[in-house]
Image (cartoon, rainbow, N blue to C red):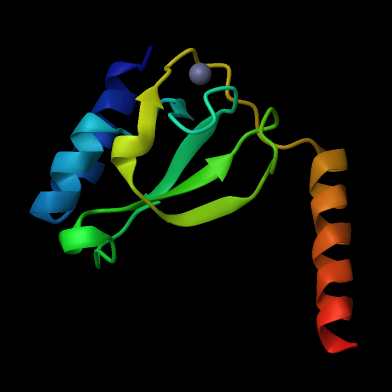
Length: 117
Ligand SMILES: [Zn+2]
């Protein structure tokens, strides 16, 4: 549950969005957790909405951040269609742990080194 102050802050945020983005952000607000139709075991939060739609027919897309229970904890994925999301709103989305972040960092470094080889 949001406090009245949080609800007001959300409303102010929504008011500043372009019309199409605002419509999507009201259906899929950034304040609750989601699961996806493809991988309903994992948790996501919406990090941002696209102001310059890149999706099919100029549809508004979102950037999702993967939670600690995801296969890619801490990874943000761009250009996602909000329609693939299932509203969860259990409030149990957890950010990636320090160990998960360290693991992701090692993977990225390894990937980077392989790219140079
Ligand atoms: Zn949830």
